[in-house]
Length: 341
Image 1 (cartoon, rainbow, N blue to C red):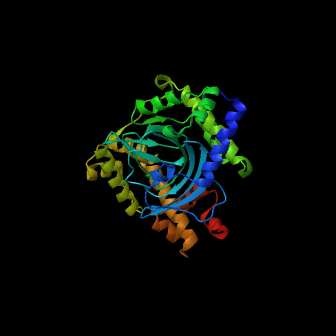
Image 2: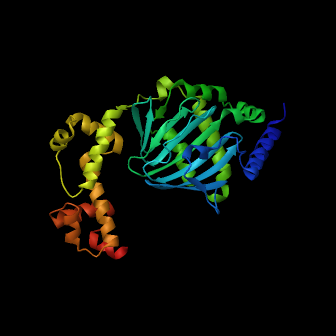
Image 3: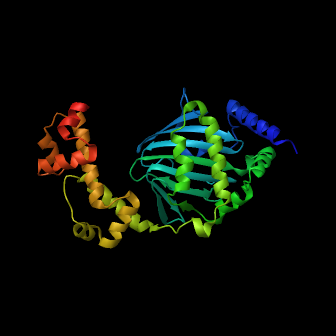
């Protein structure tokens, strides 16, 4: 066996060569997960490749790093409801996702939904199933790591073995369940949050260190102890909740009680409240309050309406209550906010 130094040198050189030549046309790349609407940017200052994604639901920016042979890391900045509704199985691929901000909806087991929120980590095998991910709040920032087990070289396997990373155990872990979520904890936060703070000059090396750290954590993961049970929602409930959401945002200046919505959409109040929070991350009242204030903030920036008129337009009959709510959300009264922007 070559010395650890020689192994590491060969690995890094191989990764750099891969960056220069890009991936072969018949090889998997993480960008395959994002669908046909993805296009590569002509110029980019960071990462090995940067991409722009746009469809009728919004747009997103993607920055890809080829970390090691068979291992890639992607920064996702999504302001859209979905990116790819036609994701297909990818043999030998493990997908790992970290949610920094926003929410991600994961469809699996055909008719079951689960939701990732800020700080959560998920992983799955794409061998025979391709899960669909959507973003209920049209806002998602996070990191994706993909492992192509068929592309990990023997030298890379030797390096991982020296570092006590068991790549075979990680592969088996990804295949043990259709989809796994680890809820936010200090270990996950330690690995991923720092990837958003590292200076550009050392980012590539830092990413490599953090990916190795992630692989070590997965090697030692004990499913029975470290993975909590997920809350699943049936497809029929999700359909109703999304209809309620559409109704509410289309009539955001009106105020509806839980009982009124329950009767109108024929769903029990308890199920409605639990499922709405599961999908959108907040109670109906808190979600709509924030939504109204977001509309108000946009009107302050883009219109000449008076403060009282804006308050009435977003459902506040009392301008003083509107001012208090806006100040609590944005830190300044509406008048001061308009002057600032």
